[in-house]
Image 1 (cartoon, one colour):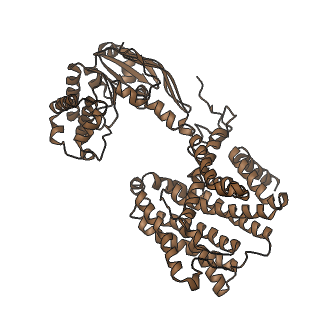
Image 2: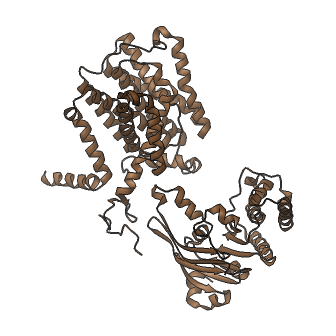
Image 3: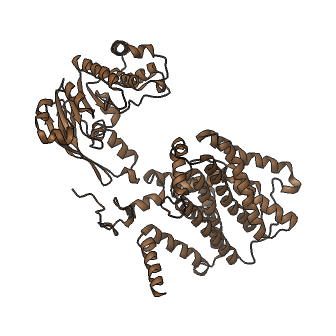
Length: 354
Length: 249
């Protein structure tokens, strides 16, 4: 028993404590879980609940467009389909949230497959254009049936997630942490458990070679679309029950671009970059909004921050930070803290010696 | 000296690609640079052409942008180390990149015209075009063809032709023989020789040592970022250890 605990501790030390990026992530998640006790202000809770929810959304975009290279400019479709399914079931049939959110996620999967089929034949800009059209079509459909869908005003009176704001926050945070961990693991090229990370990377780089290597790219692309749709759907369902309304604004163009902005700001093809982007940009913009002047200039401010950050950190904020605190050992590929001169495992020199 | 390189050092992150390389090319000289895969031949030419600096500038702030570039490059009595790549090309130091890299979706003629971008005088351009077509009649036949559909040999002709259109003072040819059949290779090297005899200065990297040594007046042998030998083919081949280790002859 003692030796097992010791091994567990050593594993924790080697996998997390020795990797500065993961230490930061651990501290950050811990702080998020303690947030209701540190700042029990309802507005702060609301902002961070929504940020956690959007983090799933942005990460699912990164999973699809970043990792697999299927440029999706209509990611709001998955979010919206799920939010509307959850709201419709809840308002009209009285289905409780614990059932509507999974059903909404499944609606997201179906939407993902639907978009995935044209994606098998289209690439790059052409695919982007098609995906751009899907949410707009859905808005049209919603406007056609205002009695059922609420039309332009949206569907009101969706049940709350739970009884209290704090509980809502914890539910969203737990789901977000789990979803993001799953996506991160699925895309981790070094993982010994799943090999999807390597496969998705291969598809992104060169589909012809991937096929020639025996990877069924059709299956994997559809899988990626449905997984991405699933997680975006989870976020959408949570959103409908948290905000208690499902309106057409969540299908608008800007809503599709938001995850892209967050992800590119944080660092594309990382998953954690998408999360960091949301948790930096979203609260910032929302806080600025409180001030009457900020309300007017918030978009300008966001865009200015974006331009300045990307000018100095072209691959996003997390990658820049990572490159300044971590160093990959040239011999064993283990991640080391940048202050080390020799690799912690194999003692290979980490810097060039002249 | 026409082209003078002093202590050129290039590091990609931690990987030392060039380690204090110094070499010279005189006016009207044909110099070859031979060495095994990964010796730094291509990087050396890219560094001279200003492409490493360009890469460094555009990738600034990313992991791939951690490039160290030291040393100096002098061309025609002028310091070109810190000039941007297009300025260097305009001064007549032209690089023919590996595998030709034609503008794939443009026709052969458009490719050649793109080479003449720096030249404003229309008469000079058409005269250069005549020269290229004279040297490579094949290109004239394929004038209207999309260059992505050219064969390997034709693609090489196109690259050389494109370089000739920019009125080069010094050709830098990177691995011309990559992926070519021996017969085609022979023919093309004869053309390169022709260009040289018309009074051009050439710096060429090559893996096929026997061809390179046949053509070049002076040779450099590079390995793992160091220059390990210099001299005429005869001198280099006389050195037993050099010949066995690096030249495989």
